[in-house]
Image (tube, rainbow, N blue to C red; front, side):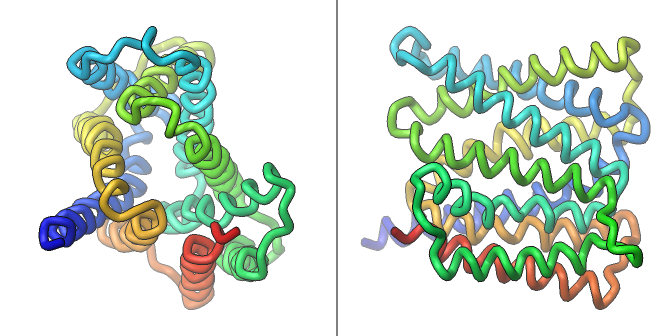
Length: 291
């Protein structure tokens, strides 16, 4: 019992660290893409992560041939990651990093919605309430005086859609495959796809600034490889709901680091919108998965 509690405490602290790292990446990436561009930043980031992931798979010792059907799912999940990170990073060039953090977090609300669609079930009252709160919060956060959504916010919202679909698929196939093989193989696919996309659109490779190199180190190793390891470890001790709730600190950290690094200041309207989004995420995560 004591050992289990200790594992839970350690997992919670590690997840809080992941939330901090992921939150910090929003303003860090926003600054870094000024020298590399969004597409090449992602390409560099995930190529580094893909090389590390490949080494992890080698040391893990489990061959892909032992897991039938892994490659197609790795391609699907990797493509969704590539879509999500591309829309998010490009969107960051056109919106505030703090806002992007909260909008990205909407995937928590979208997951039970997509699950209801897949299983042809009517959304629960809690899910409906979370959707309503998130729509109001998103409007307060993103709509300008003309009630027209900003380009960057729309792109980041598409990222949340991609993440939600990714989670729904993972939730229903993770028991079929080794978690390490599945998580690392999707990173490899995402890295290759992002490199191809960046090269097609921008054939000339940009030279990263020193700050961009630091950002690539932070995001590829800590925010990708290490974060995935921690999430897999922690979820075994805490379960999916507690894990997701702790990771909801990510948009809060994004807002804090946005203020510290970019002097992004939230108006009262944006603060209220952010609070509504956070409340909608908590409701969706606690009650949205009930049958």
